[in-house]
Amino acid sequence: MVVKVDLKVSAAGKVTSATAHKPQRGSALGRCVEEAAAKAKFPPLRSPQEVTVPFRLP
Image (cartoon, rainbow, N blue to C red; front, side, top):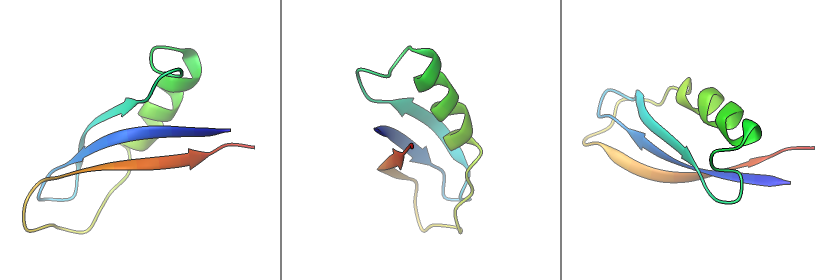
């Protein structure tokens, strides 16, 4: 199973928003993946970015 999550990342590299795609959005699994993704850190960026990240679950 793959859960896609939209991330907003600040220029400092901090995730400011994590939102799972449907059908996982709003489910316990979706919230769990969102919480884990929100803890990610990125190297500093020139400007804020929005990315979609697929999380592959066994």
